[in-house]
Length: 291
Image (cartoon, rainbow, N blue to C red):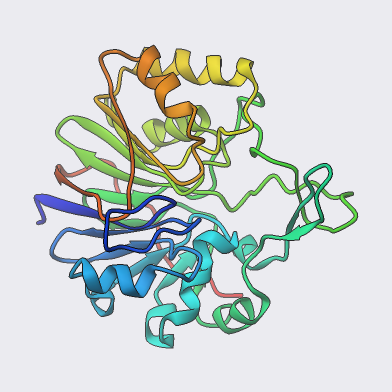
């Protein structure tokens, strides 16, 4: 039974010297038994950063997609089919999607079409939570009772903007530690409060110990920021390590609002170590689903 895990940030908007920065997110979680790659970045720095950091991607036993946007999936194109056959995610990861910002051209932001065609028949698709070890699993589809937490942008399935995309494929990772629940996010399009509440319920862990990843709060209203702040004040996590899409102003805002929580920005190359504890709930089924 693994008792410790190392999380290494491979792709992020900011990077330590000697590493490639990109608008993308990927991290490597290694418990010494079943290494997991969470997202693959945009396709710029995954391979080179992994090599510089001594991460052997060929050891990957699980590859979880947080959602299908290009900045989380593009790096998959550089991986061999043997690794793509270990990809797990929601089937909507494969759908074309766009963003429609006022005054800007419509942008294709989904997984590149050639990658989606290649990945579709290789990977495992489903909406249920998965269990990767006694101490780590995925959220599956996240319940969204708090409607103030929108998807974080003008996202649509179609270029005409007639079919809003709530990003139903968004999911997160959880770790069970002696201090409580550690949540590892991709972009948190489901909302931080929705995500944490979902995972506390799913795992039965007693408290939120910390969060690592992106919050997608750059364009959030003051009301939503205050809502997030209140819940974080209630949970009083030990740490928030924030990067990628969180929004640069959000980090000092939360640091000032949460004096007992360590709030710091993420860079590619950051490394975190966690003691693990078994999560007492029986594992959900991880029977693979194929298209």
